[in-house]
Structure formats: structure tokens, C-alpha cells
Image 1 (cartoon, rainbow, N blue to C red):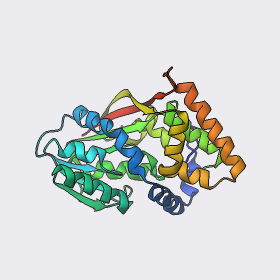
Image 2: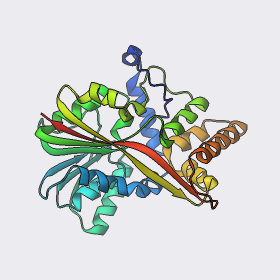
Image 3: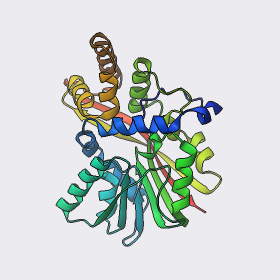
Length: 281
């Protein structure tokens, strides 16, 4: 994932960006910290997405940019034949351990979302929760999702929106650590217009706005967890001198205060995301 600024323009300059170098930096970011500490709190999103997809036992399912396996496990719990992929092997290993602990049968495979090593029309369902949206080459990633999904199959996505809490988190980070020039912001996947551009030519799209609620002991607790374990935030703090780190921390606490609906000192922050169901023609 990239720590991208959320300017919603997407200039043609994207093609000129060194996307391979961007991807390498992203991979390093997601391999840093320990995403599972945050990722496991998002489990409900995988469950909700699988219900929205109306998964059926025995269907072949591909989880793309699966992280530590939230959607993977949700699909496997519904007796699907699941292949879980990510380009960070350590995250796949975390997913593997979770599946083994539950006695679930899952195939784990290292794979790049922009170059999936599967045949055309191979899966009944392809899904990704807060994963594929962070690929630097958005058109290529979308094309790969469509390619490996069979005609009449479904693609399910959960994508953070630009105006929600996580969208604003990345915008805040982008003010302190500028994103790579020419790379389109991941939050575009959280807009209906961009989804239509990426998928509308080949599929019907259904979009529902949902909230995931971040529940932490306090704003300071959230900042400590994310700067320690969540790769993009971890890397952003590491890139800044000490005094600038304090400025970023203050802005993050202020951001939480704007969204926080708790009045007892804890943190209860809803973050908008789009639940997207794409029916491939």
C-alpha cells in the first residue's frame, strides 16, 4: 500500500511513474510492523462482504491482496474452495496459521495483484478487502480481477472512501510524507465514478456504503498501535525527524477527535467504505 495523498484527480502522468519502484516500496511498507495486529480487528468486513456476495458452498474463491486472511477465512467458513494471495509472504503465513487453528482448508499462494498467476475465467468469486485498492497500476489490477473471474461470476470489494476516516488518514500522512508523483490515489477505488471506469465496460456494479468502527482505548492508543504495527503509518513516522513526528501525531489525534463519537475518553470512530459487488458479464 502507498501512503498516498487523496487528491481525486488522476492525471495521465500515472503512466510515466516508475510503478515497479512504487510497488517495491509499498511491499516494504506492508512487510514492516505487523499488519495482523490491526488486520484482525477488521474481520467483520470480510464476513459482511461474503454475505453480500451470497457465497455458496463449493464455489471457487480467490482472495486478492488478502493480508492476514479476513475475507479468506470468512469464505472458507462457508465451505468454499479458497485460494488466498498476497505479495507479502509473512502476511500469508499469518493467514495460514489462523486457518489451521480453525481447521479450515485454504490454499495460500504468493501473488501480485497486477499479475495473477491463474488461468482466465478460473474462479466463481474474486474478492479483496482493503487490499487491491492500493495497487499502483489500478487499470492492470482491475483487469486481472476481471480476467480470472468466470463469466457470470462475482467480484466483491471493500474500499475505503476519500472522505471517511481512513481516507482522511492517508490525506494527513500525504501532507507530511508526499506520495510518489504520478500515482493515482487508492481512495479512487472508493468512488462510484472510478469503479465505473475500471469495471463498467465488463460488468454490472452494485455499491453500498458501509461503516467500519474503530474501537480503541483512546486516540493515543490508536496512534500508538498504528505507528507501531500498521506499515504505512509506521513507515511515515520513521521517515520523519523527531520534531516532525510530533506534528504528525498531533494531526492524527486531531483527526480522530473530529470523527470520534465516544464521550467517555475511549475512541469509537466510524470509517466509511464502499461494499462493491460486481457481476461479470
